[in-house]
Amino acid sequence: MSADGTWKLSMQTPIGERKSTLALQSSGGTVTGKLTGEEGNSTDIFDGAVSGDKVSFKAAIKNPMPLTLEFTASVAGDKISGNVSASGVGSWPFSGTRG
Image (cartoon, rainbow, N blue to C red; front, side):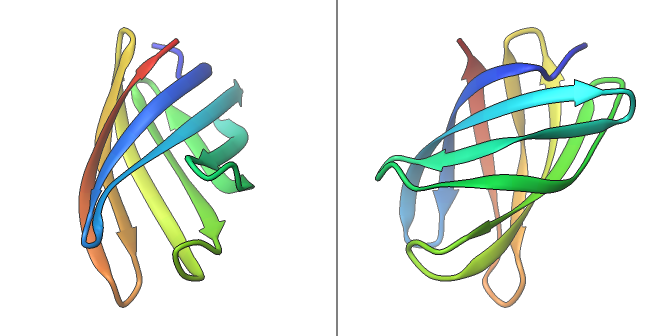
């Protein structure tokens, strides 16, 4: 299952629900892209990997505070879900749809 495309994400963070847009492009076993917050600030993802229906990557954000987010997810059709972890903050679930 390809992770390629634009995803609308919802994260249940410790400070409440956060929405973002994730654009992914895979090539071989790697994935690249951009994570854009609902405020319009965006960052390139890094350390991206894809294997079958599993995808993982990191994103360094500055808002609401400087953090490196680590995403692990599964793709099923036009749905994506998994967990986000941030060192020192904890982890929380996220989900989204493609399109």
